[in-house]
Image 1 (cartoon, helix red, strand yellow):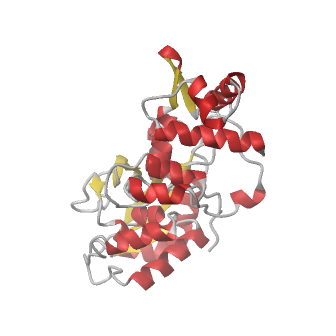
Image 2: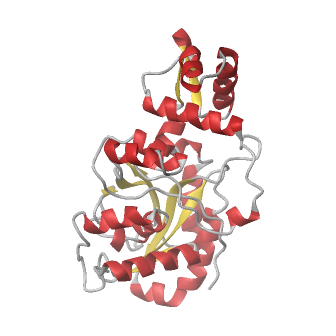
Length: 311
């Protein structure tokens, strides 16, 4: 426990000092020997939490900082990203999308469809205030901490796009709970008339959610094929990890694989002052996220799920 605590303290220090720290500074901060500080820093480098730079400086590794700050691992870590969306199109015969959270907005990074397939009209590559009306966005919100949803609901409120848009916060909370239980999200004419979507989280080999996978369809197709499409979508999303040869070991904890797990908040959720208050009373992930914060609140981050589809 003492070693784990020391490693977390070093991580805090790295998060608070983006310019970098030296081993002797770590030793002074932790009241430990320089050799112990080097060992702790080396372990963090091995786990890709920290990176060693010229001049004896150590900083948070870019991928780790990005993941904590945005709640999303880098898309480059997905194996065959284009193939994933292509497979979804081939198996469902529905227009397929893949999105990530970047800079507080939901960004569509890949889309596949055939001529004549319904496409969400006017769907911008980056969306900020439509998360509650999009299946892709509902996955993001469902995996956030309760205060994340509260901030989204109140800034600037739940905008109505169609008569089916959820604008009541209590109803949205119930919807997000259903997403957590079922492992996928749906929207039914909530953003545009006669357009429906289904979405599920995509994780990497470490169990981090790196993206959200979704499909769009007409209302008729949604009513007729919802259950079978959701099953295919969730199954395909769960296969999207890195190759076994390059993937780090996956957790063997069965409890962790059986549910959504809220993880990091985005850099848009907490300001530095709030982060300082959280530092003394909350977990490392939330506080490191706050230490990386620089902008106003918006959407929540993603966390992993391995829940299988259950009708």
